[in-house]
Length: 142
Length: 175
Image 1 (cartoon, rainbow over the protein chains, first blue to last red):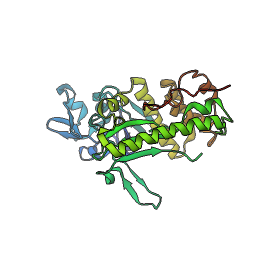
Image 2: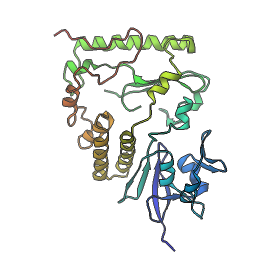
Image 3: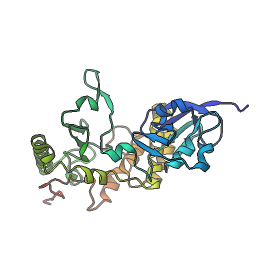
Image 4: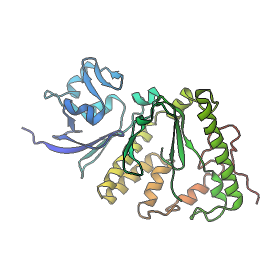
């Protein structure tokens, strides 16, 4: 039985998550953690996220999903034309933006629903302001 | 949003109606005052204030008129601004994200290595270069080769002016 270690996966703009790594070209994500780690879900029609689905070519299905149901991050990245970089010393893998496929959020034109603390420490989400126009400004104090 | 000052306009449905753009600065700082300290001559300050007035007038027009405002450009302009990165730019973005994570966990040496990789892949991307230059000189606006690379821009912009009616394209010096 192959030994299993943990790795850190950062998928696009999502927060880092701890995933299983048992060697090879990339870590694997259990299918029930795939959505929280990457935003993608395995469905009968393929890989789906935010209203977008991509069909997995039959000859890559076994490569993408192992017999244990875990999803190979390298294959997921390759299917979407995403770069995958890896820092061996820290066991960190980063999947970057696709150079071939816009993500569903960009295609929709809807701003990403981020959350930040206000001056009183209360967390505010962009979606809290639905129904009002938002001028979102970044600035510095010099 | 990777530089300041920048702004993006978002409508009541959460849709972006103006993509991220410069909103209150100009390249006047390149040609006047103490550039490293961010000081400007009165002439450059006046130029910047005029650009802010034009920009704020556009914001007010959008606030009053919504999607009828000529400044709410919407769909095609937004998607054009969100063009897909090239292969190298996408890989540079991943290297940059990895570097920021390594900085967060305190490994500056590894972060520097990944930032250098990103700078090779995307040599024109300011956020990568400036992160690299300020790694060992935090808080210094003119760290590393920043000013010499800005000078090398020539007539190209550092702060691309927003495409708003009446907004000057260039800062005109009176040397």
